[in-house]
Length: 509
Image (cartoon, rainbow, N blue to C red; front, side):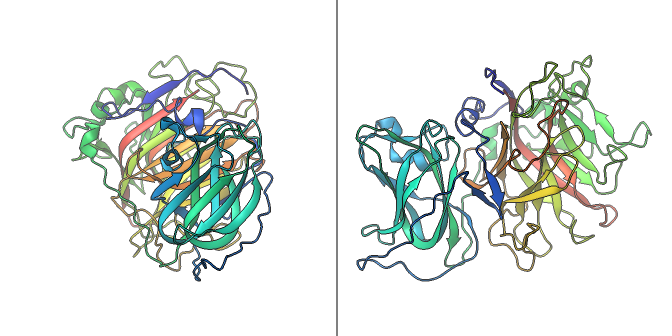
């Protein structure tokens, strides 16, 4: 669907120190290009549309890759980068690891290269590269590795991009132990080489937990602990599903936009001591409908912003449509969307049925009946760390599960390994951020430790065309949800989940 971009940004955190126009930055860079390029996920990795078969690694006598192996395949945080070529000041090699997909390294030097230092030796299994102007023509490049940073050995040569997308393209490689990864371009003289970002996946040979700084000064957001949530957040673009039934209609109460924005607060939705917006969700409470199995304290996106002449349901100005749906017959609130949040999960329910223990939904894209994305946090009893995954519900069908940040899959049903505690994840009360980005047929989820400017530590995506998800039809309509939607109805009486949000932004084209 080709439409002019009209950037509508609803910044739900009023006093942010660095409010970002996400339609201009990430949506205009990370999600540019042909999103229907045949991406699919398999066991947690993105498969490129036309994979290139890499050559087998060869190790020269001057340097030998160390032996050893590890099982995980997680994002490795790069420490530094160097490069050659006639780069401009604004397009230096550091742009490829700055976690900003709106910036890029650019060089017109023949066989220009960049070398990324991981800080210590890792086993590298996959490289994902987002190319500047990657939708215009294919790029050719080689990958090599080194332990010392001096002598390099080939990892894969003669690689080529699809030439159809600016989005990150994945290149699986033969698992190779290295500290320094070099990317060398193979262009004709005068051809510009531009790379937006390089994501390197693998595992730590030492078995140690990858340490990423979680320091995030919440006071810089200007949140006031002495006001209701609407004093810190713009809640006129949200309604609240409140786990009470004060009108005795057998369903949970919906607090509409104007009441919410006027200062609504209760025992389940209030401002915490640090100024965060607290969602407390008991597992036994009134539910939103008879078709719902679980209770919630959760915001529901309302693009009508209090204009009650617009219905809450249907493809209309209150809701939006996916980027690959047919042109809507009625005006809608947007095409595609971006939901970003900074939060901490404070409490999970650790009793009940095994498949329900410790899981809570913290963000959604909801359709009329099904959910293209349910984003989960889950922590098992006795584990220090929880993990983050999402479920993509086929329209009228079953869920497809994708891990975003946590343990590896262990079977064909994409179920995580519960036999041992994860070494990579998010602890209770640890501040982290998520972004859900929808454009064309693609949905991407990014996880950061700390605020929205912190390094990306997890990334996963799906292509709804490739999965035949069934949402590309007239009449479907979408809205974001955020908060604490319980995934447990078998735990102990009186138990509850609690999640605190510090930033929340929703935007649409």
